[in-house]
Length: 265
Length: 104
Image (cartoon, rainbow over all chains, first blue to last red):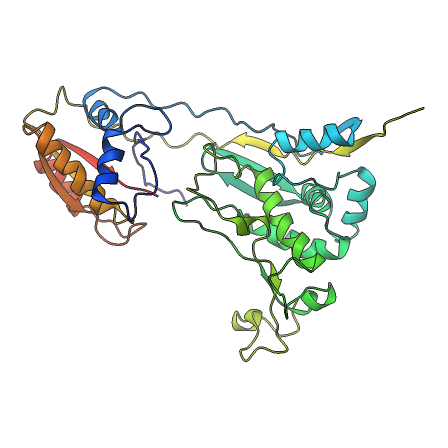
């Protein structure tokens, strides 16, 4: 079914942030102050837009290197150079990654029966107007980077299949959360008890981090390009990844509340 | 003797393609020669701070461009949905321009 909805391409003007909760004097300053993107006075831009013919803005060419559906090989190069390359390409959270050698990625792929070239999700990146095609092998590479083991991979694949980025741009410090439930949580050793949100458990750590790295590799992590978050949120390193303590919970498990059988992973 | 280890790794870079050509957009209304003696609607989306921003913007116009008539309105319904054409028909009828904001 085709939509018959149409809209105009509207000119967008940026003000300083946050707007919510700002005092009248602060808002006055936003109006007479500079657009943080263009440097021009906001009020001048408003008047200009209304009184001067506007040309549709060309979408900036993506800042992120395009790959292909077939995974490419990098190197050979030193550890230091590769770590720098991964960081400068916008593929990391700023911390060192486990370099995804072919051997490591192949071991990770043993954690799923899905074919490596199977498309997990096509993700749309609004700011660059791109569709990014993410395969099982790409997710395996990123799972290795996060430090995951093959037994963690099914959960990471499930997260990737949502196409939902962990990095949420907004005025307020949004963050996302991963709550894993079902038998797999216990099977892969996730922590849902004391210290559930603390930096003490490998499964919790690497699954949460993998989601962040996925978001970076999809293209959602570049400040002022695709990440417009006033001050960001430190939780986005791990996304509060934990598991549902089903055996101690007074409520029915989350997946059961959604109509799935209790034994369903 | 010193040596450095060099390794090959797999790239996480994915296929990226521009979205398909969008439906031809509606054209914007012809722009004004000036705002003098014109009516500009300041439409608040309902997002946090939008209303206050439009109050201050209206004040700026009243102090700096008094020949511009500004009318503040709130977009109907929820900030992200539920719009109807009532306000837009009013603006077509009585207004010359719109400033819509603020997103956050």
